[in-house]
Length: 77
Image 1 (cartoon, one colour):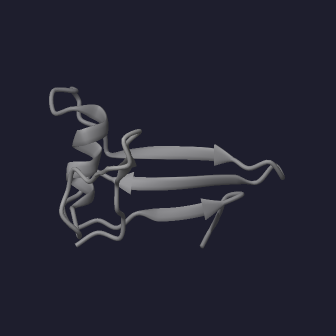
Image 2 (cartoon, rainbow, N blue to C red):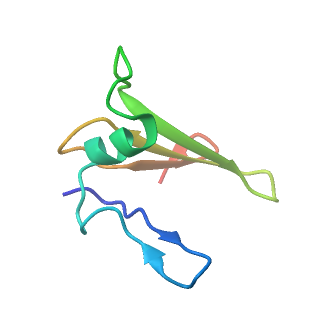
C-alpha cells in the first residue's frame, strides 16, 4: 500500500479517481509514463517551485511496494 492518492476534479463537479485507495506506486508511474517505455523508468519526479522559491519534489518509485518521498529544498520531510 502506497502513501499517495491521485484524483482529478472535473469541470462538471465530479471527481475522477482512477485507482482504489492504497494504489501501488508502480501503477501511478504506469499511468503517467505508459507501459511501453523502454527502458522503464525507475521513478517519476514531480517538482514544484512555490511562490516563495522553495522547491518541492515528489519522488514516486516504480515499485509495487514503494512509498512516495517528499523533499523540500533538497531535504527529506
